[in-house]
Image 1 (cartoon, rainbow, N blue to C red):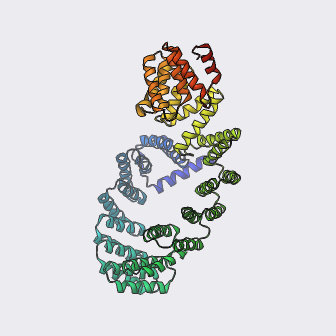
Image 2: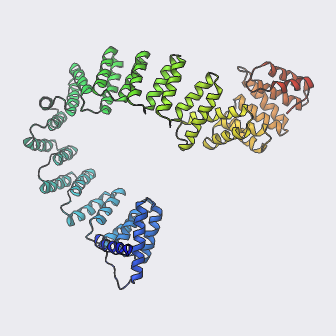
Image 3: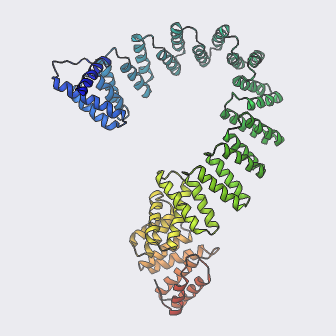
Amino acid sequence: MKRVLILILFAITFTSVYGCKVKKETLSDTLIYQRDSLFIEGLRLKQQKLYDSAYIAFQKADSIDSMNPAICYELGNRLLAKDFEAGLEYLERAVSLSKDNYYYRKSVVSANLMKKDMDSAVDKYEALLKQFPDHEGDLYDLAELYARKGDFKKSIKTFERLERLTGTDKYISLSKVGVFISAGELDDALKELDKILKEMPLDASVWSYKGDIYMETKDLDLALECYEKALELDPDNGYALESMYVYYIRTGESDKANEMMFRIFTCEEIQYSRKKEYLNQVARYYVATQRPYSELDTIYRSIIASDPENSDALLQYSDYLIQMKRNDDAIETLRSAVYLDPQCQMCWEYLLYQMAASSDSAMVEKVLEDAMEAIPESAEFHYYSGLWSYSKNHDDDAIKFMLKADSIVEASGRKALTEENRKDLWNFLFNFYYRKSDKENYYKYLDKSIEAFPNDLMSLNNYAYMIAVDGGDIERAEALSKKTIEKEPLEPTYLDTYAYILMKKGKLTYAKFYIEQAIEYMKSAPDAVIYEHYGDILFLSGKVDTAIEYWKKSLEMEREGQDKDKLKIKINTRQYVE
């Protein structure tokens, strides 16, 4: 009974809010109930963000009653992203069925703006405001829209309509000033600012805006008077400080400009992002003029003093210190940065780099440990820990960290590492499992590399070689390997793999050609595996003595993962062994 009552109440609300005008003679009570139930279900699904299911429910409701404005409105909004014209048609139908509904009319305006149809949007706004003249926000938006179209007179008239509705308002007046400036009507802009100052003579920002206009008209004395007045009223007004800085730059008064710059850097009202822009300008200036860097150091310190908990400011300062080769100061600054903001990944990376450069192994490990604790979901620090452990011959720790990095990468949709680091991570894991002869796992990481980087030559080469070694699909191995030598025809490793695959296919003449190319291009860095493969190809070509010479060359060389016992058998038995 309670559920029925709720549905009845909703139906009443549905009718009154959406202006529904159902022709009861054309719809039975059963159909009305079905329509309303489907509409309610659509709203429920929409609230749960199940938009496709909601759309289906609204469509079904529309098939029962295509003249219902509320259903048309919901379908129109949903369709705009899929089929804009169909969506707009539904919204316009909702307006035609319920002309007094503000939201339906506003949705049509928004759709025209989305389409960038400015003329239609203006027409629809005017029609909307004719019916709903007291909507201040729409008047403001219409005035802005006229300005965007370049119709400055209508923009000003619309702002004046808004003023008649709301009374004098500083922000409306400043918007008008912006339009006057865009139209090149600087005298009118000054008059508008004077109108504001008559009401608000102590507003420092308005005095600054007035100074900016005098700067445009090249009335520099008047501009200076306005800026001085602004700073007299509010010595820490960020906008006035920036305007005064520009004034001194324009008038060539560099010492006063520098003084103003220091005031900008210490001003708490000015956002750090703006200070950072100025800082970049100043840094370039100091480099160009070869001014003493101690002054630049003072600027950095003034910024940090004005916002001591800003980790980005500390990071920028540390970067400067690194460039100045003041590594100890950089490390202390970065320690402060990670203390203030433990989630600042770049801060940790800078600190790690500095510790690694100092060759302090214990501190590198401590930074890595602290970084992983601070940002446990960061794959980078587990990856770096894996590399560091491997460089120290701590293989068990290295694989533990690398596998953790890989699990984070997979959980994040493979966005947790840069492409290069992901390639290196999977190549590391491939090599680790290859050395352990763990075929299931080394193919797992080869598959990941090929899937993510189908054009990565090293991954293609490794995959092709492993297929050939393991006796897999040799045709696929040849196709993959061929891609690598087409892209890098002088790379000995790729030529060797291709020659080895051709040997496995019995194409000895071609195999000999490519392996000799590999030997030719590897002269500066001889490779034991390439010599061994050359011996294999020579042996199968009937040149046993020469083959043994190259097997012996291979045996004399050191190479990780090389099977020396197999080589010895080949040499001692004078036989080829797989």
